[in-house]
Amino acid sequence: MPESLTGRYAEVWDTRTYYETIGDESDTSIVLLHTAGSEGRQWQYAAPELAAAGYHVVVPDMPGHGKSYPVDWEPISALHDYGEFVWELASVLELGEFAVAGCSIGGSIVIDMAVNHGDDLLGVVAFEGLAKTDSAALGRLSHPHACPGWQDILDYSTVDATHSGLDPARREELKWQHRGSQRVATNDLQASHDHDVLADAEQATCPTLVVRGTDDFYIAEELFDQTVDAIPDCESAVMAETGHYPMMERPSETVELIVDFLQ
Image 1 (cartoon, rainbow, N blue to C red):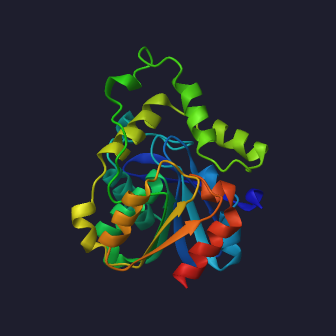
Image 2: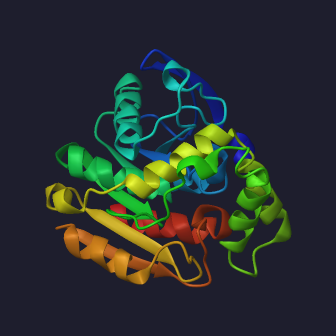
C-alpha cells in the first residue's frame, strides 16, 4: 500500500531533497523517476509491489519538484543534469550498484544515465522515454502572460495522454500531481525538447529496456524504434491499453515488466 512508503530528506548538491523509500536496505536498490512537472507520488502504487518482489525502492522528488527544493533556487534546464543529480543522490544514500527506472522525462533521464554511467548500473528501464526527442520548443510561450491558461492546458494534456478506461479517480490524481510550479514544468518540457544522446547511445553498456504504451501519442513509434536500435544491449516492450503514465495506469504490469527484465 502507498502508506507503507517512508519519506526522508537528504542533502544533495547543497539542496534539501525529498525521497520516499520502501523495502529492505540489504536488497538490490532501484531508483524510480517521475515525469515532467510532477513528483515521486506517481510511483506510490508500484513501489510497494517492487519492494514485495525483493527490491529496496527509492523514489525521489527531483530538484524543484514536490518537496525538493531547486538547486540554487533555479529550475534545472537539461535532462543530463537531472541524471547527474540522481547519480549523486545514490552516492549520498550509499546504494552501491543499483538499477533505475523512469517515465517520460524520467525515462529519457535514465537513458542518459545508461550512456554516462552504464558500467556501474545493474539495469535501466525507460517508460515513455527516448534517446532523442522531437517535441515542440516552448520558448517565450511558457511565460504566463503569453499562456494564461497554462495550468488548464497541462491538465488537459495529462488526461488526454491516459488510456480511456483509466479510473476517473486516478485521472484526477494525475491532474493534481501536475499542478506544480510553472517554471519547473516548462523547464522540464524545454529540457525534453533539447534532449539528444542518440549519437552517444552506443556507450550505454548496461542492460536496457525501453517501453511504450499503445495509447501514448507523445512517443512516436519511429522515435521509439530509433532509440531501441541505437542502444547496444536493449530490449523493447509495448504495453497494451496504456498511455503516458504506466505506473499510475497499470502499476502491477509495470512492476512485472521491471522485475522480469532485471532478473
